[in-house]
Image 1 (cartoon, rainbow, N blue to C red):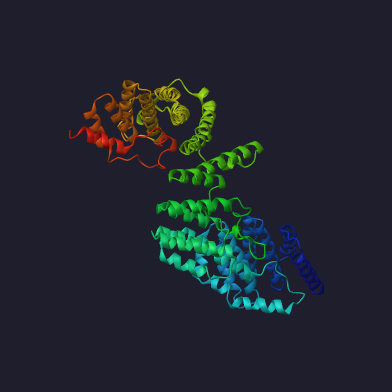
Image 2: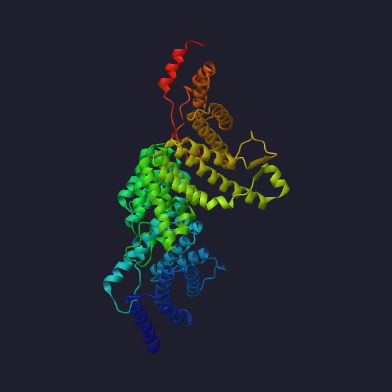
Length: 592
């Protein structure tokens, strides 16, 4: 008996030395745990054994070794039941822990078993087994864990008796961490349930926890309100999340999405600008750490729904969105600077071979970025810079273009099973559209410079590429994809540009022909219709011109849209007709 007591004290001292050490290791705790489990279970050694198992499982959890922790916890529950003489007849952890907890109720082992059950709770949460967590919540176990049971732990700590096993983590802190993490994960899974979820999240926001986790409760409250179609209340919650934790960039991103839904473009641009600057700061996207630094909250916040809510695009993707929004909403100079910063960042990262591939995966292809930036430069009256970017696109794609692109009816393609040919044709079409758009933008640039012959040349190059696309058994009136819509837009814009350029050098017959074809390819084009009337007037077909102009008065040039690439829209970069002069001509003509 004396030898057994001495061995017990030796194991206790070893546990306490390991728990008090600067560097905790699951390996050394596991060796001690194996020593204890190598002898038959006994009530006198149970407190020490449970404490060592607790310390071992905390270290396993800190290292994301959840399977190892769960296996050791299950084996420990079975040894407890051997001591109590109970046999639940199953290895299911939920049943084992219910039976084990019942068997130690009112004994000195109760609080140790609760400590282990806390770790089992954490493992279930980390593995997104929310049903098991919910089962124990329903029997008010979590409330008991943070209640009077832990008063024994306080008394035990004050006594500081040398033969009491030391725990590496205060179970009360673990409970506080798990309670708010559980509320966050369950809130993310139940966002569509409305007010009941909001009530639970508001209660969680008042709990003792790191500021970052409190911010997550406000973020989820905002997301729940957004699902309930209450955007203004959602914005208030996102603002509260940022006030609680200024590094909560996901709240700022969700705010930008709300502003976009509300069509508040200026607020959206401001939110994107702040978001981009925050993403450039170090550690803004790192998960918050627990106060004791042993267990990180990120270990328990692993559900797919929550990860989706907490995800934020890369800094480069946000910069691209910011650039595009600025251009579309008439803040062209800001958009140009953002595009140039984006291209410079991509070039710099590509040269150094760091992070570029992960960041670019969410961005459009590089030729499209060059074309978008070129369109912004054109709108900013910087034609030379625009042409330089277009030269880059042409140089990288021209040699890869097919002789022709054959587009078949989608249904016929599926029946024929020609998937590989279809993919090749689609890739060829995309490259062809990029090159054609580059020539189109260069035509616009020469039009700005009033070099009409060069403008005609580049518009013609664009048209010559676009006519390489042929249709086979395709219903052109059917709904088409974005690429085919872009194709028609580019045809209409290039024909209109060449027609306007012809008009500037008094080649009116060619101008009339191209402008008429432009109207057929792109009926919504406003510039082509107005210039068509101008050419008719110069050809002394004034009645037809008047009729054409009268149809265009109520159709202003449409504002830019995100539905199509900005370079495939009317940029108002060429010569414009003065509406006042046109009306004066109609008044001089008199009633028709």
